[in-house]
Image (tube, rainbow over all chains, first blue to last red; front, side, top):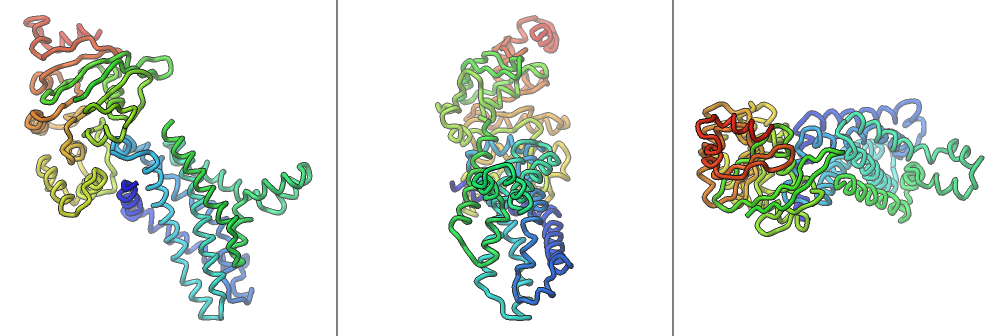
Length: 241
Length: 237
């Protein structure tokens, strides 16, 4: 497992060796902040010193933006042939998968944490509940990991980055839409309520909402972590096939 | 050092490699020859553990690649065809990464390794350049440097002189010859003169099978007076 460190380092710094990191970080912050201040977010009109309106859009934003980070993880290596170099170095598939995933996750965490000036703004204007802010950040980071797990997996399936992006987008969209009330009502119309409940339980929105209300439920944490674990396992299988 | 027994690999309904068996001892430089698509690269990829054979075994230093792939990869230096490397890294960053993953974690040791191979492959002048800006000859040398960084007992080189100019070719050959005494080397090539210039043994494969396995002089003796490419053509068609 000591091999994860150099892999992590290379992958993480790799984002900053190309313009990818800067374009991504700036776009992410610009879009997320402007959504909060837009008429859909009503950051000011809400009249509360909280980041709820800011994080409200995160599941949607991640749906587009995490595939942008995840699509290159394996597709890029496959296309450029470096995958042959990587897997003839003394590393196991699991180490390679973990090193890459953790680097991507660290990068997304950095992006999420760079929104901290929003929290400072709220603190300047009022008296926010720091507990809720902390739990929301935790939830956002966990959710980013789960999105990235899905995207890393789809990236391992193809050497075409565009296909990888579209597949990730589709998979992530599914995981978001499952929790929308209109969608669950449709499900309930022809499925037993119990099953519809189970299905909607797989939605990121359902699990993320609790965090934004200051509730750190072990069930929600377990959901995101087990989804990460499961997708990484499939990732190893996909690469070893 | 390198032992290959009955390797088979099938893609779809085409047998890319069809029961290849040979051994390479320390001090030997084995030239792997064959037309395009004969199964040279596939065989090498199976020895290095990048792809799994459908049948047969490959062992390096007594370790079976199917049993302990990481153990084999530790002992091997491998230059894949067209020398892939991370384009956005500089030569030095890339070699440091390889050194680290090869287990040279202490800064001084890592530094010494990188400096050593930069010198061996004459890359010092481009050390701060990103790999994507390098010419093909330099890229090839980066791949070569990467394969040598841990001074491996076994080297597998897929077309090491491909894309180099005559001077660079000569340099690489000299380098391979100078290291060969304590290493087992397999190299694939299209260039028949290269085999005569540096190899102690030559294997010719065609359609996944070995059609000749002998010394370069024995190969020449097959048809006295004929050019090597004529002998090659007679064997592979």
